[in-house]
View 1 (cartoon, rainbow, N blue to C red):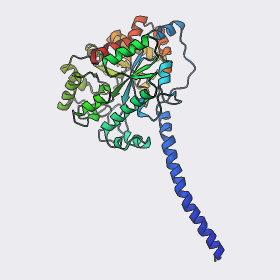
View 2: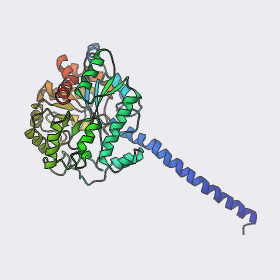
View 3: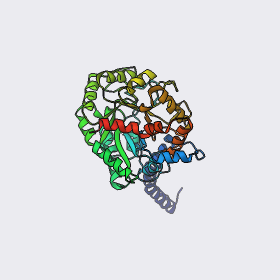
View 4: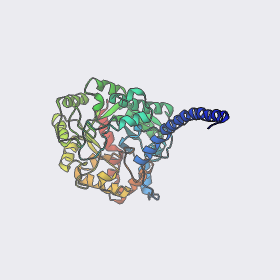
Length: 401
C-alpha cells in the first residue's frame, strides 16, 4: 500500500520523466545530425597515416612553377566548409593552395547504389545518397530529386566562392579560364573551381534539364556512375550496354555546348559508341591503366588509346583499386609512367577521386611529393608539366566557350 504522499511523489517523478524524455530525444537526434555525417566522412575519405614524404629542392621548384589541375574530387557531397582547412577528408581550399593546385574539378555525386561494387550493380538498388542528403540536412527539395542534388552542390561551390573570392573562383567559360590563369601568373594563389556531374542521371530522362545543369555552372558531364541509366550502360552495370537513343541525343547536345564529356564509369560499349559519333576530345576523369593494374575499373589499353586519339586525357587516380594497392606517391608515379608508355605523355592527367569514398596515402596539400616521385621515376620535367596541368588546359581550351 502506498501512502498519499508516496503516490504524489511517484506522480511527480513520472511527470518529470515525461518532460525529460522528449528533451533527451531531441538532444539525441540533434547529436546525430551534428556528429554522424562528419564521422561517416572521416571513415570514407581517410588518409593513411604516414611520415612526411621527401620532396627534393628540384621538385619543389618545378612544382611551384607549373600549372597543377585535378579532374575529379567529390568534396561537395560532404557537409563541411571547403573554405576552411579541415581535419577530415582530402580536399579543401587551404589544402589546395598548399598543394599548388590551380584548377580543381568539383564533381556532384547524386546517386549511389547500396552494396556499390566495381563488378555489377542494379539501378533499382537502394540509393545511398538519399539518407546522406537527409542526414546532412540538405534542402528538402534534394531528398527525392536527383536533379536538385546536382543543382544544390553547384550552389554550395558558388557560396564558397562568394565567401572567399580571394582564394576560390568559379570557371564557367574560356574567358573565365584565361582570366584565372592570368591572375595566377600575376601572383594570385586562387584555385579555379570547375563543376561537373558524376553520371548524367540528374537529367532525369529529360534533355531540357541539361539547360539547368549548364546554367548551374556544371561543365564536366559524366554519362554514367555505378549503374546503368537512361543514357546507356555503366562499367559496373548489369551488362555491357551501349548508348541508348536518349544517350546519343545527350552526347550530341553536349558536343554543341561548352562542356567536356567524361567516360569514367561508362561501359566500354558506351565509350566506343561515343567515339564513333564524335571527334571532340573526351576524358576519363579518374581511372588507371589496365596494363599496369588489370582490373575491370580500368578500361582496356586499346580503348584508352582510342580515347587519347581524340586529343583527350586519362586522369590517374590515387586509390588502391585502380593502382593495385601501391598508393604512395612513388606508386602513383609508377602508374603514371605506365600511362605514358600506354597512351603517351600528351594524354595523361591527374584525376585523384579525392573525397570520393576512397582511402589515399596523401591529400591534395602533399602533391609536391607526387612531383618529386615522378622525377624519381625518370619522368622528364617537360612531361611532368603536361601531366600536372598542361594536358588539362589543352582539353579545357578546346571545349569551353
